[in-house]
Image (cartoon, rainbow, N blue to C red):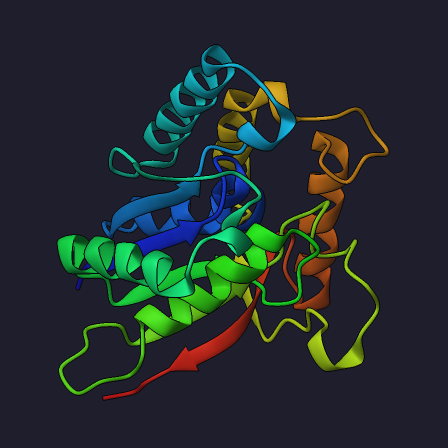
Length: 224
């Protein structure tokens, strides 16, 4: 039976870096995949409107390659979510959830270095309070290279994966989606390089007896 899957992330490319292989696997299995971006990912750099348009175009291409629907852009200020009332962010996410009706949500880890990632996580949990009648049954937190592993070492909020998804059949699809974001990729040994991401998939896979995997923390699972 197919499901509705929703990735709620701070910036275009986060969805592929953290869960591209998993989202592609969902789509290949017949699930309906949606992606929501809170901010454009370039505004904090002082980039011009053309750069934001290129990033949005890359996001649409990446979604198509993964088998997802046309993404939603909420238009919040880049790397300034700490200047927005959490209620406003959560209400915008609630609207996206009402529109798509997901049973499974992928979002950021709460301990990332990037402030937008942290507040995206908080806003998702606020929007997904387990009220009676809620369709959301599962929330998984992903790691995003060059943010999750760069956070201050804190055992109380470390990324400790408890769910591993085999992406050996969709790793090439993830690579093609990353190539759509070529402007955001870096040369090895930067963690946001093709080589580093392949190594991470190999390591996460080997950790679970798989050839390649993406890793997640289980934030919530409700079994009916």
